[in-house]
Amino acid sequence: MNNHIDIFNIPISKINLLDLNRQNLKYFLISLGAKNFCTEQVMSWIYNYYCDDFNKMLNISIKTRKKLYEKSYIFASEFIEEKISYDGTIKWITDINNQKIETVYMPEKKRSTLCVSSQIGCSLKCHFCATGQEGFQRNLKVSEIIAQIWQANKRLKEKNIKKNITNIVFMGMGEPLLNLKNVVSALTIILDEYGFGLSKRRVTLSTSGIVPALDKLRNMIDVSLAISLHAPNDFIRNIIMPINRKYNISSVLSSALKYFKYSNANRGGITIEYVMLDRINDSNEHARQLSVLLSKIPSKINLIPWNSFSGPSFLCSNTDRINMFANILRKKGFTTTIRKNRGEDINAACGQLTGIITNYFKK
Ligand code: SAH
Ligand code: SF4
Image 1 (tube, rainbow, N blue to C red):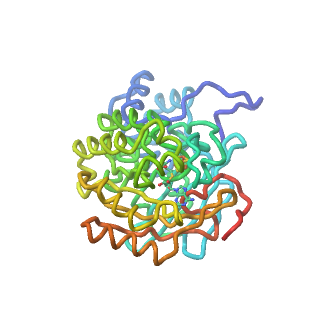
Image 2 (image 1 turned 120 degrees about the vertical axis):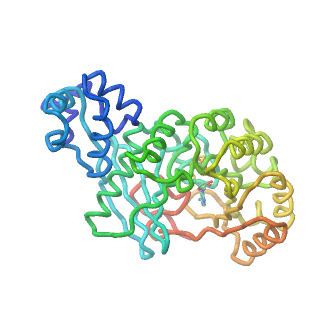
């Protein structure tokens, strides 16, 4: 039950514990007069046992439990809809005050990845992205980011799916670096051994390159970094990603390089994402330009076949073109992978996330 609303439907100013990372939870518990070690016990109930009821936290003193109940609650918005793809991908929709966000689970042989949203919508309006076309609603709170992982784990258990989440990518709706504080707090919980306990190499933040925020990030948290580059020069990037007019390719790559130098999570290089758009950014010459751009950036390149949605007049590059493009980069010495599209039949693929439940036009 949503116990932060009283019987008259009036919100009470209680704290949702899913908004607090370990440090903040510690301060909060101390303010309630609880013992220091209580923090780890409470986190363990929340993140190990998925417990949202203080009465069940039997190793916490009755006095502290009473205080916790008076001042706080544990609430993770539930999924209102679930769609399952033929390839095992699951897309969940959460309704937050009548606004929708999406979370996608992608099982593979050796790992299972959860793709989470960081904002409702996105303000950056990249022309090839459905989320960008929908406009921006608001930033997600820490608890709303964490709830996606919490509910996904609970749901997988309920469905008896044994393939646990091993990787988390911030590649759902929104630009994580425009919600820096909440995203970093959520990342801290994801990496915390008393939180979800994932290794920093298995947690990826994907960004279109908000340079001042990326410069701050390296002093805040170390995770895998993916840069949405998508163009081999500023001329093309200015057109398909308007944010490039503010932070151009060279400023984004030099900030990414600084992040790399401080990071342990990116030893194999930073991931460069490159969406393949027919006759826009996919020629042999573009591949060569890209290799020059990245010559001094330790990186691996992930080519993403463009996923269609109604609206823009783009086409995805054909398979031969994508392979040719990849081979040029490989010959220049870059580790280059071609992303397999997941959950296309349920509109769960990259850039198809809009929170709209009805089906999109398919190519
Ligand atoms: N805002 C962040 C993270 C969310 S988008 C970012 O832009 O990096 C996750 C990835 O999907 C990005 O690389 C994005 O450019 C890519 N993407 C967006 N729309 C797409 C589409 N229609 N087809 C394929 N990839 C897309
Ligand atoms: Fe926003 Fe990323 Fe989509 Fe661009 S690609 S509009 S930054 S979500």
